Length: 124
Image 1 (spheres, rainbow, N blue to C red):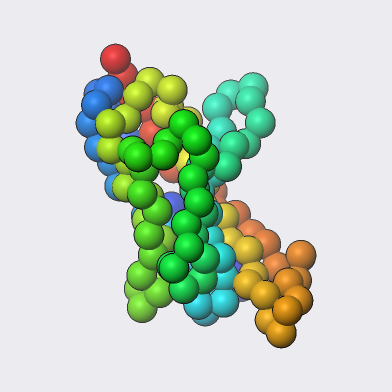
Image 2: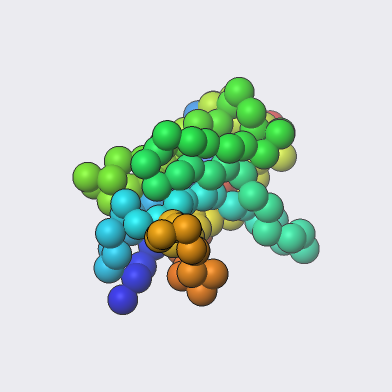
């Protein structure tokens, strides 16, 4: 039974920092590429940052480059999103996402799951 649990959200002021955490259970962390998405009411869920299963490669949505940092600790089955210089536009529910890595050149498109999300509110 795969499970992702996010934590670390809260209410902060613009310019402050938060670190979100996502813990994977029921699967081996090293089998999954991971990412963070966010969603506000009435909007499509948006990609924020991604990290490969080894942690060697990362990608970011343009608006968070230079401010957010994604990382992982496979020994702890945990993925992080360090958010610095938060802006009001960062207010959203943040979701952890897991995608099974390629095995012998093939990726299982159905090996995907989500956490329940953690709320971030940035006041100005």
